[in-house]
Length: 529
Image 1 (tube, helix red, strand yellow):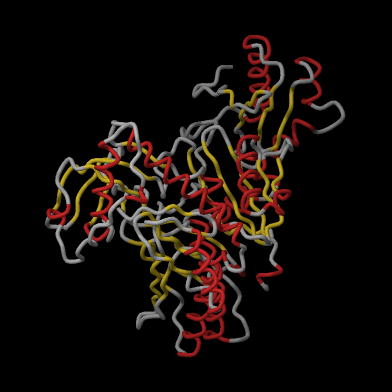
Image 2 (cartoon, helix red, strand yellow):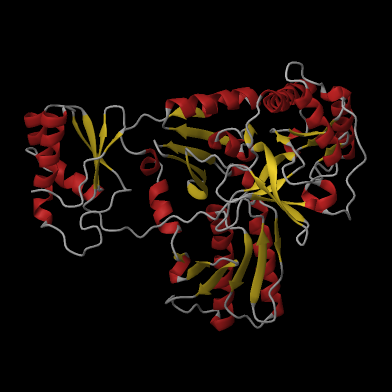
């Protein structure tokens, strides 16, 4: 389908504990991110921290940024302007009252590429660092000393005087215009990278974003000057919802649905800032059905994650995650043989697998090395066709990636930028009623069990208005008929009894929420009669 005709929507589910963001293209789930609201280790966060240990053998050091495992900083990641930073940090901290302006800061010679970590750093030295990779598995965060502040159109880099324009902007005239324009508005001692979306933008839009990014730098350096605790978070990446939108957003989006007032306000403010004419697409979702159920996200999550992923005509992928790499096996399953014969059949299954795999890489945010075992094909032109199809599918992917043609053994190797751990949604559910013991109470008594919970909630705890989330089948059973169980409950316990069908629930699972949609824990491992 032509990308221009594609309808894109974002659905944001902000719960008490975590926030989930789904990107739908033509109602199909293509990107998903879930993060606990308490997560403080976000890519882009900037810290002022102390060097804990030098590792001359690795030409690197470990830095304490407050995480249980120390963060890793390689000599080559210190950045060419490291000496200028080190001198400026000393000047800033020498006077706690008056901030030393960066425009007066002296730029020292660039760091040598063939130098060693022991020449540049000492244990206990303070460094200003930014997270480039979140903690993954047993590894701590990965750091860089090249600080940058990313906006939608521009990236601001302190202590760098260059202006570079994204290579995806092809027009020489436009590149020259942007370069000249940025040179005329940027302050001294700052470099700027102009992003692809800045193409055709007016000076006012670029100038206002530059001011916002400069303000973020000033706030960060003020924290360095005024605080003495180390490690100290001096610049937090914008909230997950906004950070994702910054990279994802394009003017073709039709809707952004949010189920939380604060997040909705935050997103609306951001969209008003970057694309005022699109502010109206941010909509507050107020339905009683969970937001992901309403937009068919839950069902797609359940069918898209897990070890086995089915795609068309009975073919399926098996996806395994290991410490070193991700391994994908393509199987034709029990699909009926097509008239094209064995070779044509293999090509058809492989092309379908290439389409599904490209979606899975984005969806699970799989990074590092991915090895794909396709079904063997004898014809060189078929192998080339498969390679070209995979390259074409991956063009939609924002993460940097590299794809190699099929090897002699029929394996395809893909590397994809790894910034955070791969998302793995567990689609197998522990039985919520037996807690894995293997026996449950008679399911015919389930309604009575729920009623005893409601009785306790209304008469003992005193909550008269609440929402009971149950599996859609159970909801249908409770609501069936004119003289339904729900109606009996409402007559007995008041009109505040609301039953909500939720696809997230397992068959005999239930959850209570109060009028403010806050979770009420009514679960006991040994259910009382």
